[in-house]
Image (cartoon, rainbow, N blue to C red; front, top):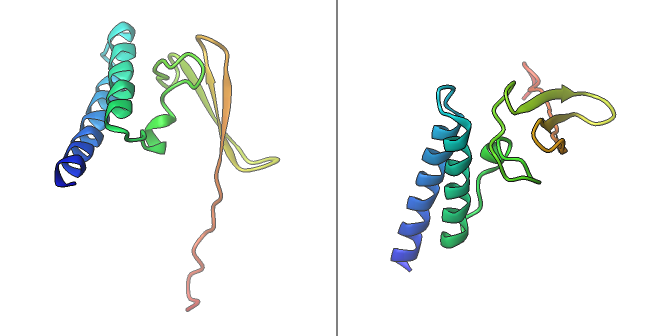
Length: 109
C-alpha cells in the first residue's frame, strides 16, 4: 500500500514536470509533443489522472500540446455559460471548460 501511494505521488510530480517542460516557450514543438506523450503514458501506467489545470494544455482529439497563441487559442466566454473555450490550431477541435465563479461578499459574516 505504501509503495503504491509513493509511486502515485512520484508519478504526479513527474507529470507536472513533463508538462511544464512542454509549455516552456523555447521548447521545440516536436519535443513538447513527446513530453505530453510521456506524461500521458506515465499517468496511465501509475493509474493517475492528469490534473484539470494541466489538461487545459493538451488537445483532447490529437493529444498534442496546446501552447497559447502558437498551437491553441484560449478565449474566455461569459454567455451562455461562463467557460474557457480552447481551440487546437492543428486539428481544429474546440473544447469548452465550464466554470462557476462566486465572488466573496465583503463585510458579511
